[in-house]
Image 1 (cartoon, rainbow, N blue to C red):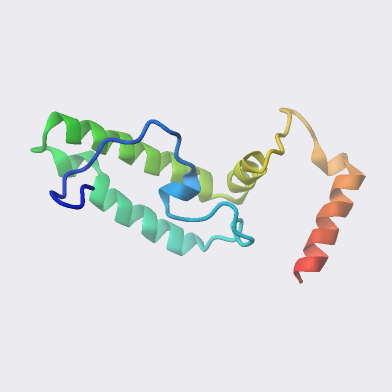
Image 2 (image 1 turned 180 degrees about the vertical axis):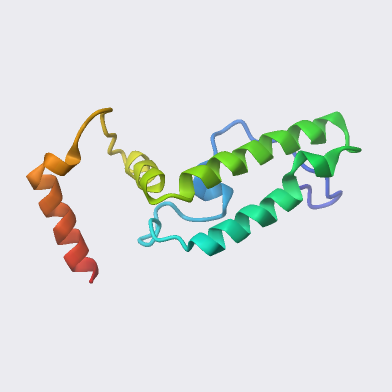
Length: 122
């Protein structure tokens, strides 16, 4: 939103991560551990502000921006709300792409490293 007139501004061309959409830090040590209730409340609050139905009488530019932002919030919420999709996003964000069909559960070295990380966190 514009600080002076309050109008909804266009979505920037750069991609916005699901974490950025919710003003969260994907690089924080606790990035994976999100409170589902807090996330849902933030999602609902953003949709109350950005949903296209709220911009029915606004300019065509604001209506388009509203649709873009609303879609971004929906996609971001879908990624962040489940541990699997959130984890896959974080792996990708940190440069660790999983190949489709790869089965990390059979990789003993990978499982040992996960156990070591969990032990350090406890």
